[in-house]
Image 1 (tube, rainbow, N blue to C red):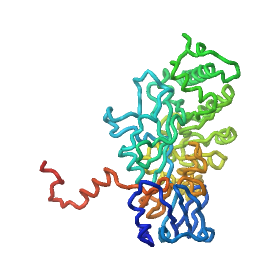
Image 2 (spheres, helix red, strand yellow):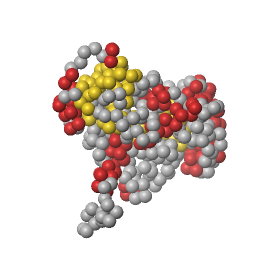
Image 3 (tube, rainbow, N blue to C red):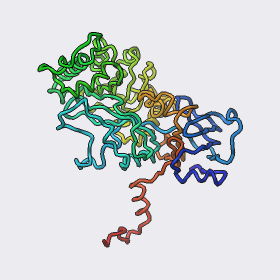
Image 4 (cartoon, rainbow, N blue to C red):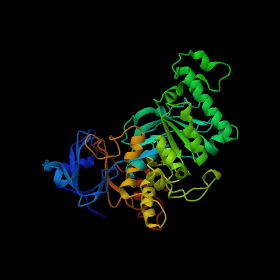
Length: 438
């Protein structure tokens, strides 16, 4: 474990979690910029007024004030992780419906559902993930009563009363097996429902250049209510990304073909378990992918071609791929999932990622897909001052953050889990749990 210390008392004051951003310098770091490049030895990162002003080798840092320097003795220093497609802030206990806002199967709305007003910044899940190095995330409700899940939000994890950075940041829709179940039992019905919904929204907006009245989109023949149709207007006009959950190669082709009728669609594929089979088509379409990292066995008929080489093969074909934080592994473990893709390079015939590529897949790439290219998930001039100091290689199992800064403000790493650990870790077997005698 590497030792972290500050050279002055003023640097030590950073640990007090100030309300306002402070200026600081981290030196003698194994620096990870998050842009896909490999770590930099003897690196320096400078943060001023909540923004990164320099990140690179010590030789290029010039002179800096030594009264706010953290010397980290070669520890890994990285941008904050960007967890994409989570349900962070939407639930406390999954089995307790009153605390779980992930699904709205009985709601009269679908596409109009908006995640932003219901995010709970005090959720223990947010605190736990912040302590794991996650500083920003995309969060959304899940499809349940309809193929449309609703509109997701981009949040930060700094504990402020309002964690929402961008509301209505994307629309989520399920095709494939999930969409089939929600739309009548067949993929055919899911595709018809999606196309019909997009046409209703197109008519409502006059997206084809022919002005239309709202009556066209709300007559007796439509499938959507007015609020749902209006929520899809930014999708058909290309102002709001459409995240499409799809796995099978043939379903991916059909999804890409949507642009023939709706050319303005800004699509992102989610899952894409068989994406490697159609990687060239995905790359040619310029559609990014949020993919599961560790699928290696077919858990359903739509991923019979599942392989852990899926992401590596898509990246080699030129596809922009982020690792999903909601892919069967806890979002706080996405760094370990990325590390597994690095390890794949040691297996003959397998396609993994380089260390830099793997880290970018959980930092700068999901940030870019979410609309924060160059602003989050990277250590570069002008980027948000999200900095994480680790006690080891962040892509290795067992490595944890020792300090986390969001927007230049140091964060508490305490949560209900950490408090329970401290409370019970040293109990003798003969001791009763504390407060047992209540």
